[in-house]
Image 1 (cartoon, rainbow, N blue to C red):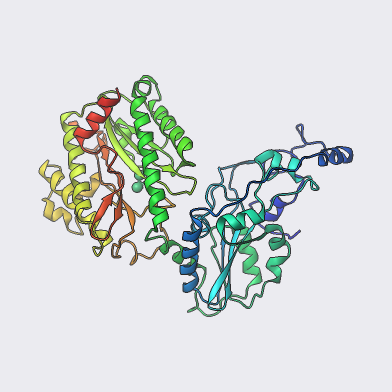
Image 2: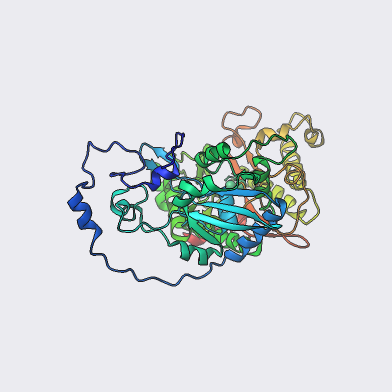
Length: 509
Ligand code: GLY
Ligand code: MN
Ligand code: MN
């Protein structure tokens, strides 16, 4: 076995059989564990029937992933590219977080929630293109004790793994044994080939590659950061498969919001109604998809003024608004990102409605300018024009709207400190490593998907606003697809206007 230095359990450590007990740590001698005797090992190894095998079929994502790899390949002729799925992450002691493959790995393989942890995609230069291989931990035979005695990866503990040949067919690329890759294959590669690795995906593997490859002496040469940038920028424009996945994620998210509205009586009755909101939405996410794309924000009353309120331990009180920012993530990892702000009693109060409709006006204004060729930053500017105008009109600003909008003023931003839009896809904040000139300062293109999510948040202790505004927080967040000549609001099916929202709650009661 290859020795590795890291605070994380290594690929090879997980591959080796014999962790008799739960999880990835050792030291379980203080409780009952798997029998270790030779007689038992012989007994459990025998008398297993052949499993019926279903014929593998190519997945819908496979040709799209191949096209994405081809685009990446064209950016890096002659270079080896290593894109790991990454290891499981420890939550505490021997308990991991739910596994999540790195987004770039998922994007470039089409493999989502059922990715075998620690898999590695390698693009090996071949002529002026690359050959793609996914190295994965293949299913262990009954001749090893892994299947019953390894709590981290054993079949009796976490379920069977797919065969290399099946994944090759499903993903439409070559597959190889991860064990062989880590134990010998990696060392035997031609290390004169310039190699880039996606560093943040798998630190253990990255450390090994750092030791094996010659250092990049030319400061002008490309490095790992270029790869991280490219796999991010590759996702700025979505393909047809991705757009369909986002539509499905948004449809499932609408169901989650419907469920929350149907559960409002129970939500209001609970002392921790926000938790009930989260439980209801997250149940739908697990039923329809893989999980939530980010922790559900269920922020009632003044909690709505806390932008990422995920503690969700407060009551949901009639007369208040509740801000719910939630998105279903599918098995493909594509996620929605939707916010609706609902009057708990079913009707907006006068000031609540005024604030709500100002936010909606800002969202509508921003949406109205979206088409190919505008700058991404213009979407935010358009929303801010409305936010400044309305807050000035209500007498909240020390200056007029025009002056507030000047770069060195921005007083209106006291009530909305966040941005208006971010790219959305396989990550909720997608394309995070893209260059600023491709993102904020870049031109909008057909096929981009992003959020429009203005808000107004009047903190309960904000002395610049009249008492009746304090503790009101509103955000309206929709997911938008740029089309050839404009934009489509993908979340148009989820009620938005104050009247629609009231009717929505009324119809469910
Ligand atoms: N839910 C996080 C965001 O809206 O950006
Ligand atoms: Mn968002
Ligand atoms: Mn959101």
